Length: 303
Image (tube, rainbow, N blue to C red; front, top):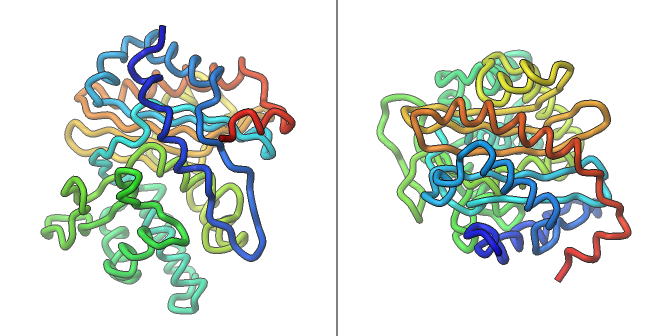
């Protein structure tokens, strides 16, 4: 018997079917459906952690993409297209905007700029984020996120990454069109950001390498980092999290022992930080006990 979330995911993965490409580059589509084995494993992991009620109430959103075999990515999600307040997690959008400006020659990636971007991501500095948002330009960033090139905020997919406010006490300048959020995200759109990053499809291949380096070596050890470094030593994580009141978010590319995957979780609960620390360990176990998919089976997920 299908669970509520498994009956609701039939169409959400269309978001991944077309990935923006640059100069002839391409990467495999993630298909229009969840990988059945990974999806079942994700649902069992949520039930094991007693988080099913949170999923049913749309207080927990998760996406998981196994990219160990780059020719045959596999994905699963619950509440993947649910828009949620995401606190500092959308600072990854500011990072993208800065590198687009750098690529165009509007900004230079000098030592000062690199330091500001690094503090914005690794230390989640609100001062650095506000400075960089204003250098990139609020309108420029909003247009970039909605552009055909990226579609990282897409009303047809219930939204996505949005930065409509400085990170401070100033009022919002433009809240997202669908949910009136100042800093928002969906789990699938964040996963899509990392998928394009890993495949060199954000800005340029060189820019992706530089952005991934900035996302490495997180300075705040909670949520995903707490769970992985405590239970899975030797893990590398390229990550951005977010916290504000009851909202707890984490996201990243995770690498260890030849396996590589993208994990995103958005929670709205006072216990959300612990949820995410426990969840990432379960997701890590799920990835490691599920063999990577072979490229020859990719056609089975296409419509």
